[in-house]
Length: 223
Image 1 (spheres, one colour):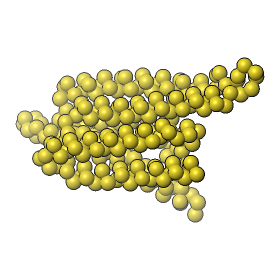
Image 2 (cartoon, rainbow, N blue to C red; image 1 turned 135 degrees about the vertical axis):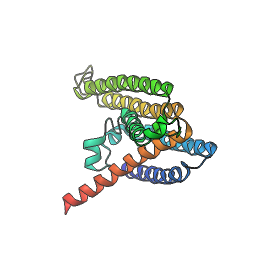
Image 3 (spheres, rainbow, N blue to C red; image 1 turned 90 degrees about the horizontal axis):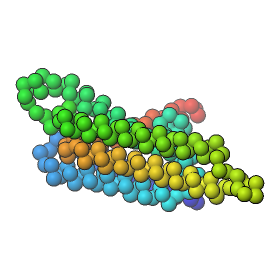
Image 4 (cartoon, rainbow, N blue to C red; image 1 turned 60 degrees about the horizontal axis):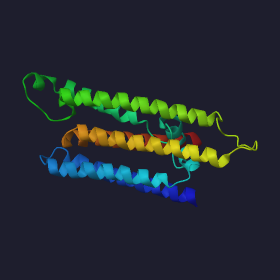
């Protein structure tokens, strides 16, 4: 029953993500920073709500992610979700793509206000975010490796401390989810509302696109 409930929760979250992506796409070109700021806030709250829900789940089910396709679990997931640095890499990619497309305008002094028009201060903050996030990712990866290698798995009586192992897994996954959420929040803080909207649309495109590809691939392999 718990797996079924967790699967329903994931599908509800994904449906909400699709809706927010649609709203952000419709509003990101409008000259209304307040509306964009509100939508960006709702997007972050949506991620935060799902993060809180995951914290209540059995960590073993969270790590195995039975609601995800094999492609998602095998090719995209790090500690039961996307690597936080993926968002930073996506930000750099989207910024570079837009910068190249609008370079002639920028040389003429025409500012676009989108991700291709990041200021030196913003770039410095993004670089700092990337360095800090990589360091935290590495620490969590090492911690999970110790759990998987069985460090501290044997109790005083010589028996495997299952509860202790599950507790350590819960702790690592909780910190990984917290890092994902902090990375989203910090990226949004650095960016202007229109820029944040572009990044979040791209992030939703990636999440939903990989999901659809994984399901399509699994379906083709089973035929």
